[in-house]
Image 1 (cartoon, one colour):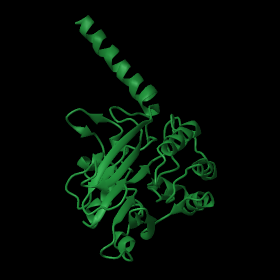
Image 2 (cartoon, rainbow, N blue to C red):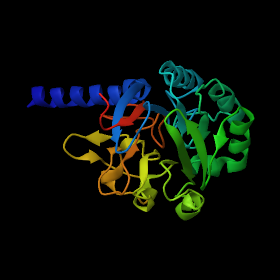
Image 3 (spheres, one colour):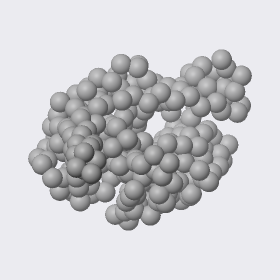
Image 4 (cartoon, rainbow, N blue to C red):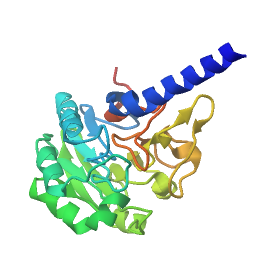
Length: 276
């Protein structure tokens, strides 16, 4: 029995060391492809990074530089940043001024532009200050609106939905000016708004959940913040009108740990169904 107890304690210590000491700093790139009906012209590449929470343990400015370098390395056509640039209340963390965060993000390069929405932590910090910092460095913030983008495969619209947890989400307003026959990409901070997306949207991206931070085999996320169901914590989520990828994000919240849910950036390629 003593040997069994020793094995259990050693295993728990190793899991704790992994979850607090290693996995939160292990940045992956998730490469995805999505075939779209009636897509003509060359593929469109989209890079995504959410929930940076700059200042959280393992997610300081050095991690932010890694994120920027990783996003740029794929030479994407479009870069999306779905919110939570700052952090509050992570044990062991230290707040970073939005101006410092935005200055580093200003290195991002994409022919169609770099766009963002704000998350709940951004609004708790003072949403307008975060927005002004981002836009001062060439990152356009879209909150409950949409803009057309001229791509090599024709015009496509990009819509941004505000944060659900803080009451800033207005999906109907976001899509109000989008033509009914337009191709549409959506970014939002919280997947709670995924059921409100129009079926004609090509793809959508969300963050906020951090994938749960802790994902147990055969069960998934232990906890999902906000209104989204636990099944919508990570990956391609089921039972919504639009193909929607919920990313695990980069930083952490409350506790600086991750298990079976490492930080990630996302690189997605949209192409026609007949493309190889």
